[in-house]
Length: 197
Ligand code: C5P
Image (cartoon, rainbow, N blue to C red):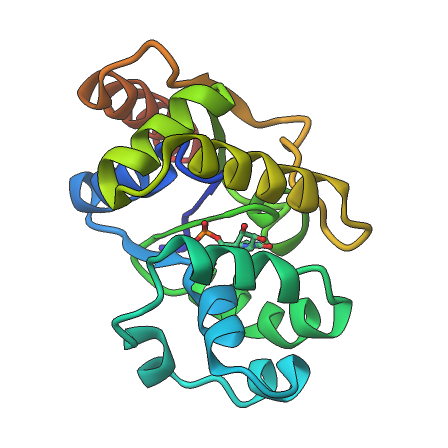
């Protein structure tokens, strides 16, 4: 069975939590596509060559979750050749038997426009910065500035900018507990699953 759930949205909106929960609940495989861009940014050197040669071991580096790695990722993610080099891997993952959840910025719009379910997870910049700050610490104003900077780069780039697909279900998690956001997302996936049967 091929069943793809595309989950997009800005940094710290709750995509990761929701994606992992949906994958666990329905027994689907999960790919955090941000890790691909983070690994390319962390590898350094020519980002296009890094993207073309990326291996699964590169995704297991311990330093990929930091704010700095997120900024580096969003800088290499503006390059069309980097994005192009990562398309085939993501599409293969989406087509795997048994169902797949992919989360990122352009999954519902570019990577898997035929996904059976599309979710766009968002929240205010202030709420997202607060979550990042709780997770990683540091100077709160600086965290908010970095969230805004990354949003602007991700939404403003010419190649696959961050935006909701026209047919995505939008979930704003600003005022939701994580479990309520997960329940909402699972209900949308379940409805999509049964409409496919
Ligand atoms: O989701 P995460 O914060 O790990 O993503 C890091 C960066 O990678 C994003 O800010 C974005 O620039 C880039 N990215 C992307 N397309 C994706 C996933 C991530 O451009 N599908």
